[in-house]
Image (cartoon, rainbow, N blue to C red):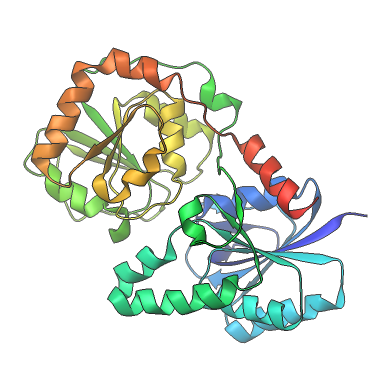
Length: 338
């Protein structure tokens, strides 16, 4: 008989019909799909009216419009004493779910994917930081923690994992590119916290071209510029590799990140990466990642250095040992299911 794992998330899922559910978060797609090979998965999430980009290939997906029905469904699952629970990220919804699990002494894990302190501060200022502090302290008390960075544990005990969506295809048929023409690439959401609008503002006074690849199906940009190209990519899978291969430098302008998947994707395709100083911690002693200040002068200097030393940088990138989806799922399996 298979183990049972309920995955509880704050992410919104779009219900296309009774069998097709879509999300935007790659972890919410890949973790349930991969762990479904080893246990029976149930997903509990908020309902979305907005079309999402990634179809989740598991059977038991439950979406709710109200917090009360969301919590009641979790409560109903307590009848089965064999169920384990995995909470992905902390938010008001998952915080209340966590409290409910604690009240009934249910075995649960909390997977910390990003720094909520920074995210809440970005949205609500110092008051947001205080709100998250309360959520974090109450949630992590007597909980099994999983994090992609030790920093996220905030001196609590926990398990460190190395998230990845890379499969063998990311390491095959590697393509060289002529760096003489600088082609910048950004892959991600069009959100303020992702820093993409800040980057667009910086590039206004430059001659650099930038391609933006996003999974947001209705993505639009106010800025109209022949140097800026926007591609809406609905099915985020291995076929996105071609965009990395067609560009010389990947840039991640985010204000806050924990373990950005796109960074590993760029390095797997042997592309140098530029990040701004706010997220210099994502370097993690890997080759091929360069730190720039958030201004045009510093960015130009960084790009100039990369272009001048491109071949040597690519050779150093080859020395990286990148995590894979298989290794990541094995880490989760050992923590949660064994």
